[in-house]
Length: 87
Image (cartoon, rainbow, N blue to C red; front, top):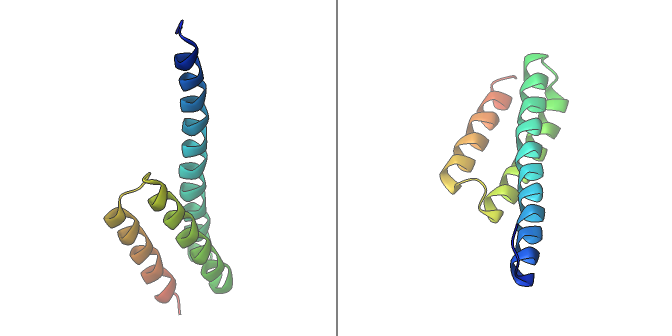
C-alpha cells in the first residue's frame, strides 16, 4: 500500500477507470453475442437492432482506446455482412 496521499488517490482513480473499462469491454462482447444469437435464430429485425447497438458500443470502446481502430472496423464489418446475408 502506498504511503503518499497522492499515490493513494492515484490507486483509487486507476481502480475506478479499470472498472469502467472492464464494463465497456463486457458491454461490447455481450452485444456481439446478442447480435449473433439473433442471427442464428433468423430474427431479422432483432439482428438489425442489435447490430446498431454493437456499432455504438464498439465505437465507444474505440474512442476510449480499449479497442484498436482496425479491430473495431473488422468486427463491425463481419457482423454487418452476417446481418445482410440473412435476407
